[in-house]
Length: 176
Image (cartoon, rainbow, N blue to C red; front, side):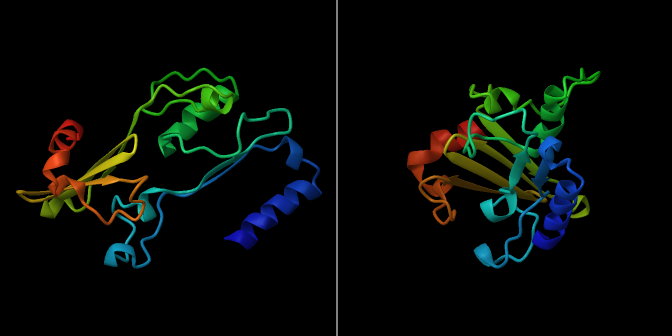
């Protein structure tokens, strides 16, 4: 992937248009690669859900920062592009423009939602909400529901399920 991306960038430079190019590099999912003893992409753990989201703007736009931990989602790509290009969208979208953030302002968002619809024939799906430092994962399998709550800042490997701790019962219920 690195080599192919490099070829595209080199070609843009060769043609003299790299400085004017808007490039977005991202992915639709990460890979577990054995983390949590899983080898799949379709789960809510950080190794699968957190993906690169890199934007290289033309030279005439300078973002207010190089890196952020602000909650963003892939559904924000479309409204961000529309906003950056000053194109009025006819329809609404669930995403929000990241342009205020890129200009140094705070985003009007406090939660991110993630879903995976799994295998409907078996009645399985996953839902997730990230709210500040906490992530609640809800797995459903037919009539069974499994809850996992993690502080992704203090426990980035998601090893301590706080949903089973009575101290976090109110937070768990709030995020459901």
